[in-house]
Length: 80
Image (cartoon, rainbow, N blue to C red; front, side, top):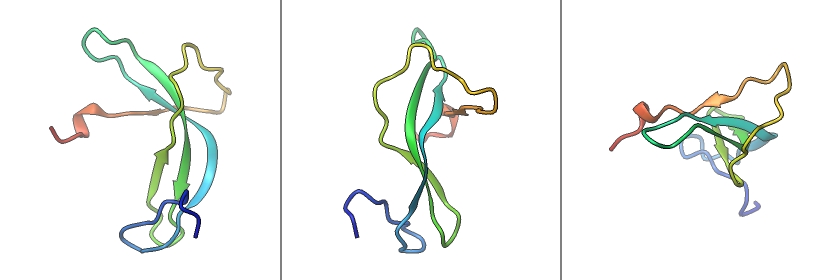
């Protein structure tokens, strides 16, 4: 097991990286403008859980592939 591979807490299986440079949109909030980030998308082969981790710095203007839609982060779903 590599210490860089996430483990699914439900299935106790090593997750599989399915996409590097997975685009996530961080919406505007208050005085902060929206930003875009690239992360790595991992899937659990057991239960199908998905996570995005390992974000670099924010992108000022991402180069969008016409077929690529960013995952929009939902602040409202976060517990305070």
